[in-house]
Image 1 (tube, rainbow, N blue to C red):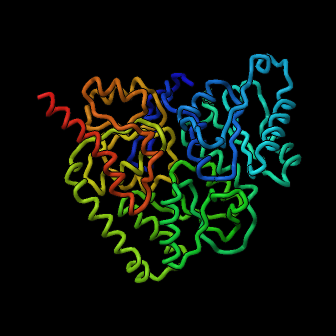
Image 2 (cartoon, rainbow, N blue to C red):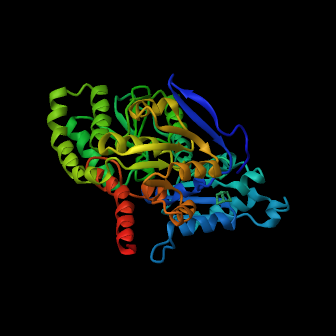
Image 3 (tube, rainbow, N blue to C red):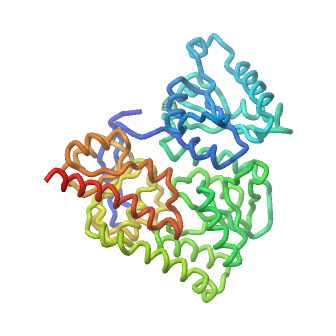
Length: 427
Ligand code: SF4
């Protein structure tokens, strides 16, 4: 997972935005982590990781141990004899899947999830999924994607999962809106109500049940709810869907613009849009006002983690007056991010990929008021007197939309408050 190729070379975004390209040591979760929120979202799916004990531990500690419910994820452990090529891994897998589906007949969608060990032994999970889908397809769809740390970082697991769903979605000629990206149910319900009030028929990918996945086709217009879905977007476009270009729905203005682009694409009357959205927007702005007082002028750096960094930096900068110093992202999709980048201050330093030592050196030199970073980096930075925010909380909290705007801002205000309290106590 490491390597020190071409570290720190600059490449332009548009004409005037240089980007530091980092290709060094990484400190992020692998794509298996996405299972933690995906298994809650698709309620009759099961995620079977073909991996090692390390993969099983990662999932259990990230998702917590479920005592009262049977979990809808598990790990088929690849043992040493599998790695040595002594066992027929495909036969083992078929046996395990048959056992699982016999014991859990309520499972309607089974994801075989690849990991570093399954890649090392070159287990072809796409082919295994086809074979198992034929065997169990009447009852349970079987699909495959990779969450391995060799291929994916953190949120790219969701991208790989949703991309695996797209080829099997039903076909439609209807002109409908497809909102793409896993959202907490409460947030999805809020957006569904707003789209309905605007007169737009909206579907969501992923749906909450395997049998309710949306249909797509050449008349589908899709709107990304998450900024890390490059492969899924490509798969939808291969089915004829067209993207609605918009910034992401973070904050009062971000959510307004996101909805506005959808409304324009579906020919919603402008006056109707304004009268529907204005009260929601105003309420969100009122909720944000005290947080703006708290956060304005504070300098913030993002270490690369989830690909949420650029839209969040835009929200913090344009709606709360924070000053982004460095915004790092594991992968920069220039097309999907173009509108976001255009709204960032001209002097913000952008970096793509990771070289953790160099990035930490820059944080130490910049000494921002707040650094957003992974769990493993937070403690050392705190020990050096730098306030931190765990990036993972931003992925696990409901942060999209009007009603969550103030909660999102508060996630950044809280560590600064805590620092003030500690300073007062230490004085
Ligand atoms: Fe570790 Fe790879 Fe398993 Fe992720 S997939 S937990 S990086 S071994």
